[in-house]
Image 1 (cartoon, rainbow, N blue to C red):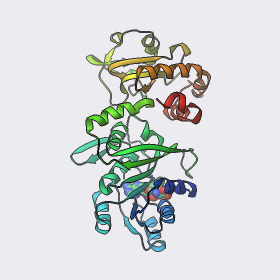
Image 2: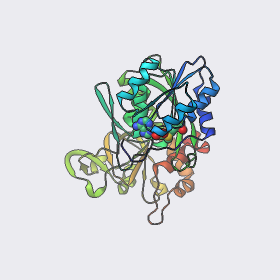
Image 3: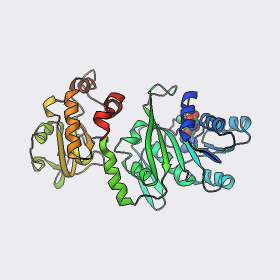
Image 4: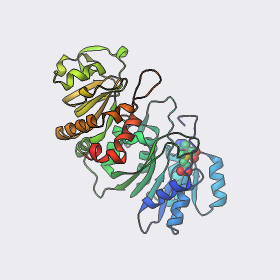
Length: 358
Ligand SMILES: C[S@@+](CC[C@H](N)C(=O)[O-])C[C@H]1O[C@@H](n2cnc3c(N)ncnc32)[C@H](O)[C@@H]1O
């Protein structure tokens, strides 16, 4: 276990129902929830597909004992679904694969800044939720996955590698967005993500390309605090919020100080740079392109786009909706924006067409 919080934020009925509806498959034989809790998601799927065999894993012995009593026909394992041993017991009963995985994995990271996700011969870095999704996929090879995930798994720099891995194996789509108040006791913006296994996996190189394409509205938060930036002669150009004005006016990036790169907030391509702290000046909202990596300071956010045309169009739209954008910057002291607030605003119905359909 990585945190002391076991994330027992069970799915309410309406969430379980929409998860079951999103399964969308016929002739299903088996379904797994590798963090089944009290079985809300499996119950909803069984209701829609009465002949399906349900399997669940959970770390919480009480939840599993309870389910064994009320659902004796299910395959239930008490264990850590990030560990092999739990899956061996599932495989003994179900074989090597299942038709569907329905997931609402633990989100809480505590103070941990990412975990290692160990695949055959490779290690990715990502959030705890992403680690759970990828581990479940590797152990159960489902044709369809329906997962309730923290919003950041679809946008954050931390889960960039994990998203590329998912997109290599699955067609991934965000089906719905849940309010932060959806799960009793937790406050987290979450998404319902549907994934259908590809008939042919994408080659890693085309995944990178496709991933870049799908970064049309990726939001990258800079990572390097100014006071920790270490100058390095052949390092990476460092973009701080005070540089945005000059860069959008055409100043060459060679004028930037070069620093030792940090793990978070390295970007390239077409983007709009916004200050994270301090309301942006409308005149400084413009498209910017860099072929090579730059390191963003922790006071800068980049909205990435797949082409110059789209980045320019998005900048025009952001300037048009400047008042709404500015209102996202809040704070009792310095006003700041969060990636969550920005992404919610950018993906809400009114803005979907103008900013996200790129
Ligand atoms: C957010 S709840 C979701 C429960 C259920 N899927 C639902 O939607 O109602 C997360 C569940 O993950 C379980 N859990 C946390 N860490 C786990 C781990 N490493 N392996 C298996 N289950 C885990 C918790 O005990 C909890 O029941």
